[in-house]
Length: 203
Image (cartoon, rainbow, N blue to C red; front, side, top):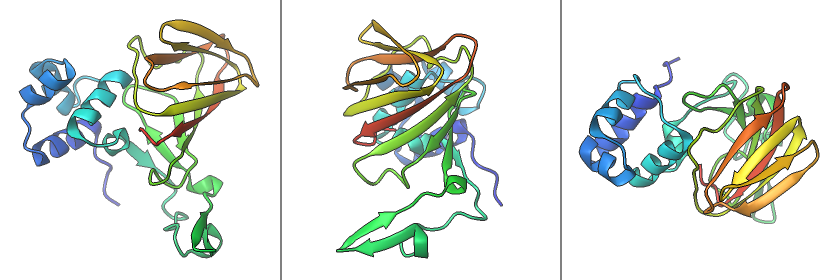
């Protein structure tokens, strides 16, 4: 099986496919040409906010830049695969089995992020995050289109939206418009598990 491409390799391939120079992308996202060159050589990492801006500048969803793993021995194409996809009154009902979840690998992050929806083609994106104590999305705020809802399943969590701070305990939930700058952080000495629903899919 082919080895998954690293972030820098994916970024360079997509940029070149769109016939954009490092300078053009850098000017669009507010990063230097030399820094982006380091990123493409996998010698530097991007914050979540910077990654989102680059994806927007390239005209692609952020997922296109991320490595995603799943158990390929058990993974099936969703449409027309017995229990995993069934036709009902002209619509398809799709099931993602626990061992078929795609795990998104974010650059510079140790969190385990699982995609619970089959793909990003519908109106919803559902993500399960399992993050270690002290984990943060970074110092930089990020934003995107749509709305999002999050609930803390385990642990304590901090969500900052437009620089306003919200402390969430287990069972607490939050919703906001995603164009507002936001970032998150795990509080305390224990890991946290959160569930996020985003519409439309923005990552």
